Image (tube, rainbow, N blue to C red):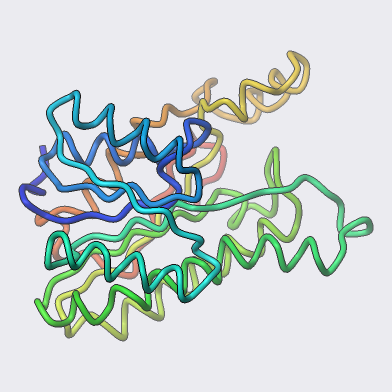
Length: 252
């Protein structure tokens, strides 16, 4: 499908079975990338690595706290020690919280931004030198439809703000590193069929679906396919872009 053979790809937040990270990792591995499962969840890391290997792919696991610079730097050093290169970074790690602005605390705001924006910054910064040294790199950042339409189903204003910050950060970084053969793009998923979505009660679920012209949530593989494209050789002339994947719930 897309040319990823031999590329080394870090996917943050890919140890959890609840989100889209694991599917992203599997999809990249199917395209013959060497995938790094980067997460705080040791058990989840081991499960994902084992499943990818059993399916014939190549993967290693690295425990990392994306909000801690020392931890992120150690992750990059470990990957370089094993593979000697980093070609792709997918900043997938993220958290959410449903709370109103009136009830939100500064601690709530900091917690969301620490993972969704500052963690993304630390991981992106850490891979720039290895990518520049080879004059090649693909950074794909996960934003959200909430960043563009002002909220969604699960997150509060701090979540929307953090995901909007991802879009601005990505465009600026894209300008900085384009001369180094590095592209930086974003994907903004809408409602996706994960365990989080399945936790909604029937009435709430029906209300959400009513706002999606396609009448269904997206599948994780549909998000992962777009990310695989942006991470591929074929996307070499695309940078600073954002791809909306939301079934029509928001249209620019």
